[in-house]
Image 1 (tube, helix red, strand yellow):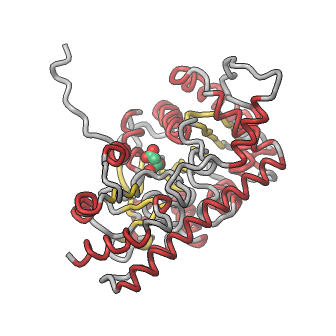
Image 2 (cartoon, rainbow, N blue to C red):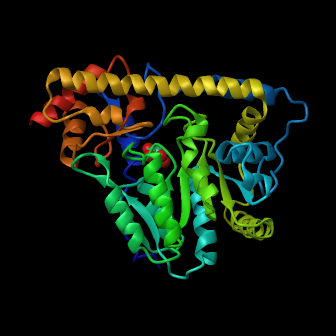
Image 3 (tube, rainbow, N blue to C red):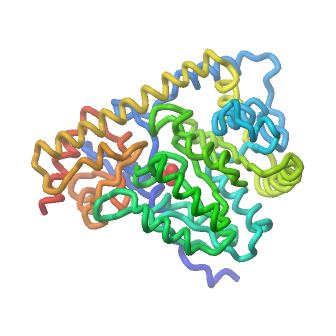
Length: 402
Ligand code: LMR
């Protein structure tokens, strides 16, 4: 029956983790998956998360019942405020619906399935940036959309190709859906400036394009949760009806708990009410109800002012260490006189650097130095630490010279 099943290619990011784990060389370095590591190269449980778990474990009314279809209420209300701002007019007017999701991927998938049925222009494609997170295409194609790309990175200068992006958006079919990274673009670490976001909003409004923001790094880009949500809030003010997929994997370190939210914004309370019934239906059919453990942890942090303050400190600990690694890597490469320019490492923001290394060079780094990075030259700076920084810089120097 299944003779015609062909083999799917391995996932480009997750497969790196598998290869890294299997590698027995003592010098190995994991710059692949975007997951925070401390300066000893170990996963870090945020102190705010530890405390929230303690609070939950001591709650006498704690249990393992199903969540309601919307998820943990403290999570969804707190997450909406985090994204739109607590004084958001859209929230005040009840024009936002938020549902808990299986992290950012689940939020994108529920949104993608909802749009497959209700996008205003049937057959309008979904546009993703070139390049983008490897899973974007797979998610939207799986939900039945045609996926196209818009220009994003100028691969020569490693800066935003704003003219190419605006041109592609101008030429997009009316009613197309455009996936936008709210901050800390993955994989490039290149974000539009506020002025560039204005240009993007203007052409999208003119072409009646639908924004679908993906935000997985709020708190990692500028170091401020509010600043990192600037583009989303600006688009709401602009009057867009839109979707937002939010992940707590990175900023709360809840990778395996699969904790996130999907937000939709419409022009009226009544439309939002109807949207909520359809989103609930899609979510029920795919995951039934959300997963309680991560939702309760994140909800506890968002509702408690002391835990929230602790979380802000934890975010700073992570983003400061990543910035140090950025500075360190650039300084070392410049000191070594590695051919090329390396300012992009510190110009870019978030968890990644888009180094400019190509697939052959990435392969060389893996084979000769046991350094793992994606074949588009992206490195997760969180995999660097004071013990391996010098080793990595020398390896990059070698590969660039050879
Ligand atoms: C990444 O880009 O490395 C992360 O978002 C992890 C993932 O799921 O791919």
